[in-house]
Image (cartoon, rainbow, N blue to C red):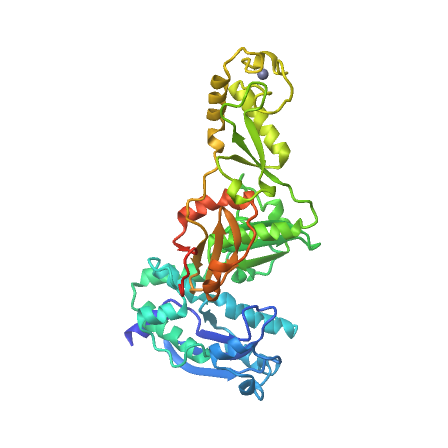
Length: 470
Ligand SMILES: [Zn+2]
């Protein structure tokens, strides 16, 4: 068959298209409940294999409904330990192919790890393959692929059914494409990056391609580095390239022994998650209050033309006509001193010094404090100096929800009002979001990240109105 042969050209080894059903999403905490495999060699399906697996724990009700696999069905099925040797023998020498392979491959490796065994195989992720072949599409979940390419699937969300759909995808969608294009996409999807020697050679399979937060830990379990990224895998790998001067690995790359990643549907969620994690880390440290400044136009002689506003102790209704924000009183004072120097402002008039009569700036003040300069002239210069710090007012009518969707259509709704983050919710919570009762507290870090994120947001919901569904 022409098509089968075309596919075969790209692989030097036989294939195992694997799909697992599990009790949940975490390879560390959840267990496998079903394994389905389509074995291919020479571009042809050799055989299919599937079995239920007794997870040794109850299957959450929502998952039972999702997969149709119930506690009763797995009750008499073999435990993974009983299947481990047979499965290893079946997969030996094959390329492990799965949709979002880090999930299936990660689960299998965890199951083997529980048995104090190791499992490793060359891995091809069909999400990466699809992304690489069809970059014009945002959705690459199995539902999207089935719909887009009209794939055959005997039973969606059952292990063998999903594996069959992937086999159909490879044979009828991928194989007929121009060979060079397919070869490049497969190379990309299978690329095993060079990692520092102290890391597991296939650790990179665990790192999401999309958004999330990643953390580097050292041998003593100490957190060495944490960052949010819209492309976690690429960001993590960027630490392991040659150094800036072309030398060897960076100090961080040499010290890291473990990497953890949390996936989020989008970049905003990743940045909010990073913020939350950093705060958890410093939960014992006292919170630094945020301040802002307000210009008092026409303030009388001898009084300051700037009012300090404690953002952390005020309500959003008072956050109007402000300049800032400043994290802590020291940051505010430092900025004011810099502005005084750069714009020849009066230390007394800007509120850095109290009292009447000439300020301590001497010749570096044009005399707003001593009648040497009209107050209006000084204050106009002050307004110009502050211009770049002007805090924008909230551009919406009230509460909004920023929707972020992952490649597999998982979605988060980040709720904001007056630059404050009220929380992140799932689409199921949507009807309740207009009525959430949350105190709005000023958060300078959210304030600073949000304008750029909102400008890039694809979907913003008006939550002053009730919406029934996304
Ligand atoms: Zn002065």
